[in-house]
Length: 446
Ligand code: PA5
Image (cartoon, rainbow, N blue to C red; front, top):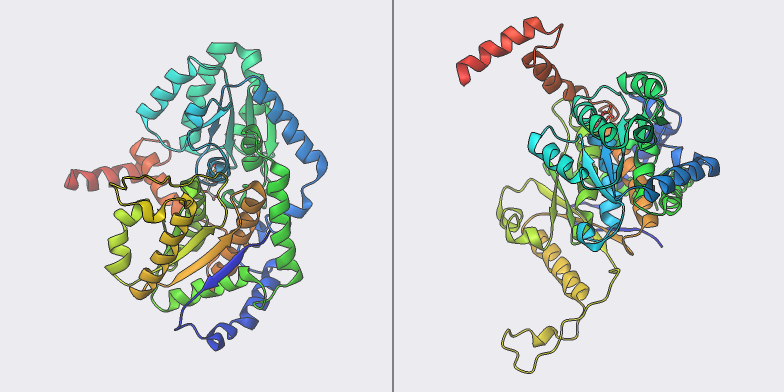
C-alpha cells in the first residue's frame, strides 16, 4: 500500500520547487538533530519505531478489560488530547455506530463547556454501563477538568468508590499537574504523556492509542503505518522522491503566492474528524507571528452544495488538499429501472464510489479552472494502517512547513489569551487587575 501525492499547477515550475532542495535537507537535519525552535518537543519524530511490544500489549489488555464492562466509553479531553483518537475512531467505525449495536460506543466530553451537552450525556450514562479516560497532558485544562469533576461524581455514585476507580483511566504528565495528583490519591490506573510530545502530536501515545484500542481498532496496524512513513523520511530526508517534503514545499509556495487558505477536502464523511485533527495540527503549529496558512475543511460532495460556490468563484486566496480514497469498504450499485422516471439509467450498474470518484475529478478540474490549485493525496483505502501513514505524513510535513515559515511549530502561546480573560472574568485568585480592566471594557460593549 502506498500514498501518492499529485498536483497540477502550471505556475509551479520544477525549477522553483527544486530551489527548496537544500532548505528541505537542512530542515530535516534541524529536526533529526534537534537544533531548531521547540526542540524539546520532538519526541514524536522517533515515536512510532520506538513503540515496543510490552507497551502495546499493556494498552490492549487495559482496553480489553474496559471493553468487557462498558457499553459506553467516555473520552474526556480537548484539542490534542481527544482529536487524534476521534479522527481514527470515526474514520473506522460504522457511520451509524450509535444505532448499529457496536459496543462500546465511544463518546466525548471535556471538549466544550456546554451545560446542555453534559446534562444530556449524564442522562444517557444513568442508563448505561460505562468507563472513562480523562486525558490532559498539563492536567490543569479547565474544560476536561470540569467534565471530569462532574463525571467522577456520577461514576462513583453509580458504582461506588472502588469499582469506579477500576473504570477510570488517567492519561497525563508523569509528575506534574492536578490530574496526576488526583489520580495518585484515588489510585487510578495512569498512562504517561511523554514530556517531549506536545498534545497535537500525541495520537500515537496512550492519549490516542488507549481510546482507539477500546474502540476495537487494530493499534498495531496504525503504528505500523506510521513507522513506514517515519522510515521513508529517515531514509530519504530530501525533496526528491519524498512526498512528505513535496507537500510541505508545495503548500509553502502556495502561501508565498498569496494562497493563504488551505482547504482539506474529503469525499468520505468518515474522514470529517481526520480533517479536524489536521486543522488543529496545522492551525496551532503555524498560526503565529501574524503568519501561517489558515486551515479549513469541507466534505464533498455535501459541501459542494453550500461552500462550493465560494470555492469556485470567491476570493482567490484558496488551495485545496484532497484526500482521495481509491477503494470503498463496501460495494453498492445503482439499480436499473425500466421506467427511468428519474433519468438515472445512464449510470445504472455503476458503483456509488465510481460516481463519487467522477464528482471528485470533475470538481478538481472545475476548481483549477476557477483558480484554486488542488493537491491530491491518494490513499488506497481507509484502514488503520493507512491512517497511521497519514498521521506521520502530516506530522512531519507540519514540522517541515513550520520551519520553512520560520515559526516554532511546537508551541501555542496564543492559546493562553482566552484562558487569562476567562479566569479573570470568573474571578480566579491572582487575576484581580485583569478582572477590573475586562469588566470595564465589557461595560462599554454590552
Ligand atoms: O496541542 C496542544 O498542545 C493543545 O491542543 C492541547 O492538546 C490542549 O490544549 C489540551 O491540553 P491538555 O492536554 O494539557 O489538557
